[in-house]
Length: 431
Image 1 (cartoon, rainbow, N blue to C red):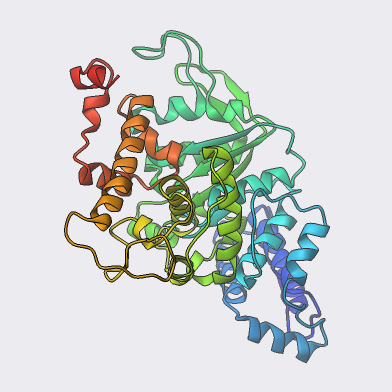
Image 2 (image 1 turned 180 degrees about the horizontal axis):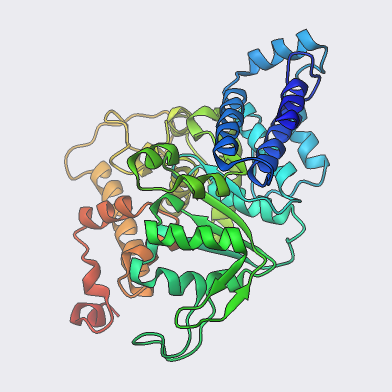
């Protein structure tokens, strides 16, 4: 208790800690509490809840409130726009991509920078498509394990009956089809980092086994009594509210506390508007290189639309849009090249000049352009399905596209994935 009181006093009004330093101190306090041997578990849980509440309160402070608090305590004032981002990069901060000056995002990156050199577990939450796996790679790349394996696991994609084998491996003959000894993901990530994506989808039996690994740092292959020591840094991610899942009884509270020693929340793209033009340029260059095309050009009205669009799919949706525009547009992309479900109803068809409007009769130029775009889209989908043998999930993964959206596109064009599966007559004919 004396340790907690001293630390909480350090976090009081007289403290001159920076915002990132304040968060770091809270996380260290939470970690120290979790491993304390002098307190009863009930006392530890109570103090952890208090530290969690304090951390959540600090994370929710607005830029203005932090500025006022810093001014009142004599702490350094908020840095000019761009200074925090530039300071991160000048500290040799490794980041695969681009990011802007959003305070919430910079808060998350600064916490990740502090956490990266440690072996503490990290929990990343945020909406789907906000870049949680990218943040996991950032933590790995900036840590002491950067030259070691990085293994990614989608917990929601593993059938429950194969979960233990996938994570921990199996011995030959452990079950039907186990023809050889096989390493699991944790063994493959030994001395490196394992990223457990969609941790909220992990069934309760799997949560119990994961908790055991976190506690003992040992695993057992399916069908073996031998314990194997594993030294693995765990980074988990979820787009669900795990506290709500705990209340509903579908996620273990003790596992949540084990995973969230460091807790990072990524803001949605609609709160990071300054980042959108940067992402246009970044993904535009990436698409041009991958598709062997000229860099993407947009009409002013398309650019205005994309700058104001809310992006329910966040960064993943923006990236897919840029790739679509790069694929379908000729010289310059316009509103007509957007997917129909998000295209403005009053969108004029792209013409030779950006601001020139033309009236066309049915079956004229507008229909021809739309048909050409649809044909290119259909050809792209059919080629992709042929390459993945008709597996929609694999095509969605390769394109980094939401599976429901991909299925909607297939339905729009009347494409049946089963026609492209190996052995199907239609699939053979398509080849």
